[in-house]
Length: 533
Length: 51
Image 1 (cartoon, chains in turn yellow, green):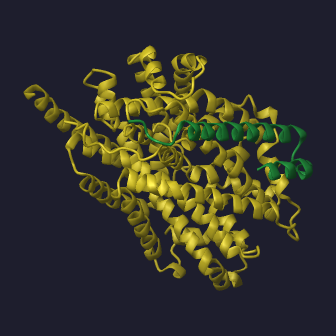
Image 2 (cartoon, chains in turn yellow, brown):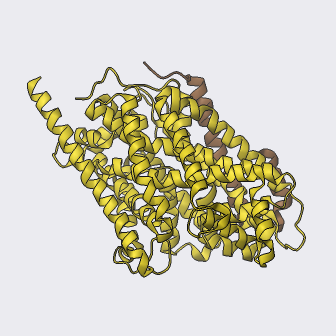
Image 3 (tube, chains in turn blue, orange):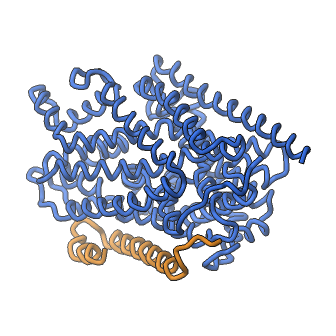
């Protein structure tokens, strides 16, 4: 039975806001956003992006804060318990299982990518990229191709003598896991809040240093691009793309990823608030801080500097190759060519590492909270279980990365299920729990007056938008991926990858069954105690 | 930020179209105003978690 008296709480309001903003500001702000904007018509992507921010992002942010704080009042910080209080129906707690498995599965592959950023920051400082190029420069390949091979070698997709297997990848992954575990062990106020309070300002400081460096770089001999062209590539409106459904899907999807909505993490964070704490102003502050990191800083780094070095057409090709191609491959080449590049390269990759770690600790919190609230685990025991599970589950991610295992997990847990969970929680909160009660819950203790129009947006527009998004996504991509017509990472499915893709699906399904069973056991115990009392 | 916006207005014309420049300035400006406004208000009300 949840114990209300022993629940932790946040130390300060700014600490809470930094922690939630740190959860939202992740690799997506600096890697995914510029690629998505550039691929989807630049300025014409930004129009649906801003509309989606107002119609989905901000309303859902407020709803998740409110749902979390509501759960905290009843001693539940994870969505199975919270949903059971929102809707008094036996199935509600099982719907909440989504809020446990999504953050956990994303965490499992996210820490692996996060460890690449840490490794790359050290490689930059120690000049490893240059050493690699010196070893391979006689092969006649371009620097971009060499750095692409470097990434493939490091991550184990290709075997290369330079890396002696996956030893280096395992080492950096181990350090990343230890860093995550340490922050989580320290608890809410002493770990997550403390870390966010210095990591987030440092992240902004690093990003501003990089923006200044990039916008003061001289023209590169042989390249006809400028940083302004890069900025224009993201921001110049191409209104012909405005009526393209795919652009709207990409924009709405980006809003979900960037704000970490539909994950269960915001619920867990907000559950540690006091019943009368403001959520309206805090929610707005975290959402807009994330947007500052994304549309101001995120649009001023990777694409502009890539256009300066490689020219516009080459940058388009790089961006079409995906976020890793832009963020890891091309940026490593660029930093090899600028003065003090080792230092600036370190800043770039360490910035990504900070962005990643503030998000990954948030992804771990729902399971920790679930074990503490529903099974009365103490904090250290709950964190140990989470870390043990993560270590066990990240092994296949590393070993089977080259077979599309990570891409499959990313598509289902990190893309499709986010929107599914967002739609479920919206319907539950505004239609089942009731919009009047939901509106009162959001406004309780509020330090700002939320415009009344959001009452109607939350009740009608947000759920409709989410259902349309879910339907369009399912028929546009999910169905083809489900029946093995298309690979989750793009392109056709390779025959030898099918067992690994299937294994990824079995893994997701297995975790759904496991957590449904845990919820069943917890409520069986909880029910008995309630009858006795 | 203001220095960057000024620099944008001076030099951005070579890569940014007029529409792009206006759009970027409006988005960045609104983002900054809301962010600074939110944090000013929080600091004014108080940084403490309510009891």
